[in-house]
Image (cartoon, rainbow, N blue to C red; front, top):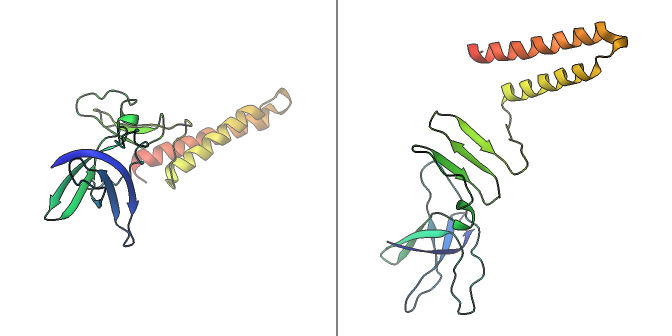
Length: 177
């Protein structure tokens, strides 16, 4: 097994992800090899920066590569262009990152998942609890903004309803319903 620099990663005609490695030594080539990822995680590193004047690649994701007979196999590793900008990890933590500044997901030692995105937002997908809570919080903020001296009774009713909705969501979530 050797470690090299990943020049690029692309899908072949059969739909399999391949990594192209800057191999070193006599008669070295940049033959694509089948790319593997740890079970349950799939990633596609970005291409290396252009080579220097001598044709050497200096700046790209590292890739572990090995041969099975004449077949090249690869496993992309770390990309120092991005990973060196991530926060340091406590023992037992792990972090998932993409090639976007200030975006990562970190599992903490207490089991919590901390997500930081480049634009400060987290996509919750179609999680009905998160969507319902987001909608209820918006209704609460709208109700607060709508309370004026001239409509105190209507505004208070809207606030009470918004708070009840949030409480119901919290109760149902904690009870597993």
